[in-house]
Structure formats: C-alpha cells, structure tokens
Image (tube, rainbow, N blue to C red):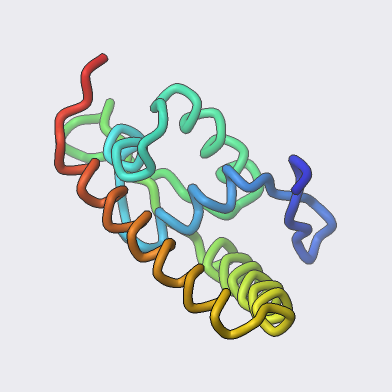
Length: 131
C-alpha cells in the first residue's frame, strides 16, 4: 500500500498512519498526544506530526485544558468521523473481496492467527517496555 492510501472527498489524501491515528482517536473519544501514542504504541513526536496534518485537514480538533494551558485534548471533528466511516466502509469492502477469494480453511487459519496476534499485542501493552 502506498503512502497516501486513502483519498478524501475533497481530493486530499491520508496515509495509513494518519488513518490509524484518526481511528484510534475515535475509539478513545478524546486523548492527549502522549496517551494516544501509548495507545498506538508509537513515538509521540512522530504522532504529533501525523496529528498536525489531521488538524490542518479539519479532521481532528485541539481543545486546550482550562486548568493547564499546556495540556491539549484531541478529538475527532464531525468531518473526521465522516471521513473515518467512509474509510472503514472501504476497508471492510476490500477485506470482503479478498476473503471471498480464499478457501474456507485458509480463512479459518487466518482468523486464528489474527486472534493470537491481537491477544499478544494487548498483552504487550500491559507489560513494561525496556528502552
């Protein structure tokens, strides 16, 4: 998949990393960069650049904390939620097309492997990472 993998209705493009960040932000509803980076298991500096583009495109909004002006909460805008739904629909359609070409036993094996993979990812979030 190439860098600008998802086209928006206005002709702009989102990278896979930008789509992942938007999707995660919608899943957690509102987050700081630091917490969102931990959720995605990515570096907060890289994520900050990714999110800046989403803000510029009007897909994500920043809300300052009135108690701590340095703290900023990120939220998906209505435009971001609409773009996410279109992208999610496209991803589901692509997945359906691919799975329809696979033999049932291969689909079952894939499902088992993905389940194991995601269980391990979740377990790794709970463990401390040595830097």
